[in-house]
Image (cartoon, rainbow, N blue to C red; front, side, top):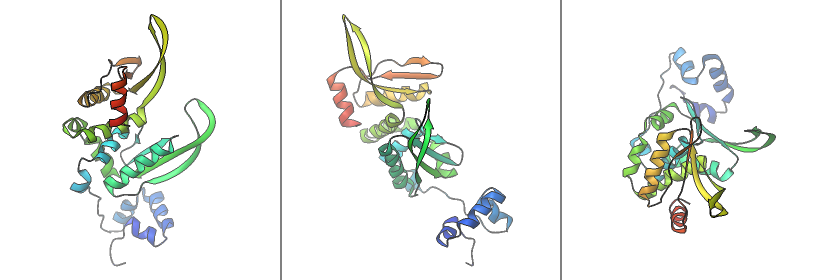
Length: 231
């Protein structure tokens, strides 16, 4: 080739076997190149990729809810195929990379019976670092569509609709929209964002140790606003 090759160049040449061997022996392809005296060109995010967009807001919402991450990669493993594809599409558009999308057959939670799950995986130390260091409070000053996109990503991961009993003279059943997470501060931020969108919420309550939740206030207007602004 006459230059230090990239991993993508080797893949195009059909040399995935060489990539696997480098990772197995040296721990990473870049470490293998360094041991051979070849130059390493670290990946850096462009200013365009760091720009606050609806896609970045959605990614951050997932990142703080259902996303699984290490220092070198971010992943999402869920039962909802549409959710997985939405996350994949947002990553592709924001960072111009192609995450791996795979279908798995595995048990989840307390259910021992195997079921189909969908996994989105993107390996990038630089992207994970950027997402971890991004101050999500900055989103409060953005346009409503960006705020709504963050809430949508978070809701897809740690939100839901449930039916509960309300004792108001007569025992009634009521459908409620709720958010749950182990991070109290992130739920406070979600409440502030919903308030910015004129959507009213109830107080955050402790469900169990290090697990908190809050609901939207009942009311047709509240639910209509949530449906139209967030989805």
